[in-house]
Structure formats: structure tokens, C-alpha cells
Image (tube, rainbow, N blue to C red):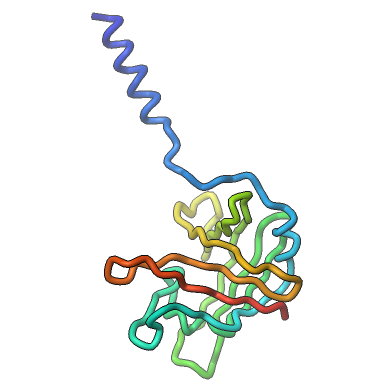
Amino acid sequence: MKKTLFFVLFLATIVACKSTSTVNTKLDNKTERMLKGNWTIASVNFPGSNYFNVNSFNIEDSKCFVGSNWSFISNNNKGEMNLNNPSTNCKEFSSPITWYVNKDGNFVLKIINNHKAKEVNNGFVLDVKNVTENSFDLVDKINVAGDIKNITYSFQRK
């Protein structure tokens, strides 16, 4: 009986400690160095953008991100994002961020917003595409009536 109880507790411990994260944490330092600096989102594109709105990063409508400013520091994977387009009806928003690019081509982002990074339990995983010296795209997947569509944030170096 003791062996059975020990075995059940052992299995429960293994299952309870199993990681739920499926994001690769091995860094793509070359891509990270290319993203270092100050950027602005030049456009946000997705199929059906004329017919429905997308709330980006749980902050604001995706159209409000056009003109937003982002800074990426590659040696410590920190930065900042700012939505501050006074010509729109969008709210202003500013927050420190943490980020990294992994070997799978994913851009992993946490919006800190008055917290310590280790206290933030959710984040965003986007595909990084078309990286050049002066531009790159972040591609997120959204569910539109059961269909998965891509929303592309196109960045330009400032």
C-alpha cells in the first residue's frame, strides 16, 4: 500500500511540475540586434479590416497602433511602446516592454505596464518576418468567425 501511495504521489508531482509553455526560449541574437533601435508602426493590415475592428495587444483598436513608437534594446531585451496619435480618437498609452526573438522566428512580447516583468503572466507571440535594416513585420494570428487570419504590423525605422 505504501509503495502504491508513493507511486501515485510521485506521478502527481511530475504532472504538476510539467511546463505548460511551448515557446522556444533559445534566442536569435542576430535578429535581435537588427531590431535594436527606435521604430514606428507604418501600417496594420488584415483581411476584412474595412468591416471589423481588432483589439491589438488587449489595449486599443489596431488602427490606433499606426504611428505608435517602439524602442527595442537588444542587450537586455527591454524597451518601450507609446501610442500617442493626437489626430485620432484613440487613447494614449505608454508602457515598458520586455521582448525577445527565438530561434523559431517568434517575437515574444510582454507589456509590463506598471508591474515587474516577473509579475506579468501573459504575453504575445508573433511571427517576425521580412527583417531588413529599415523595416520588419510582426504577424499575429486572429480568429475571425472560426477562421485564422493574419494581422500584420509593419515597422519602419525612425
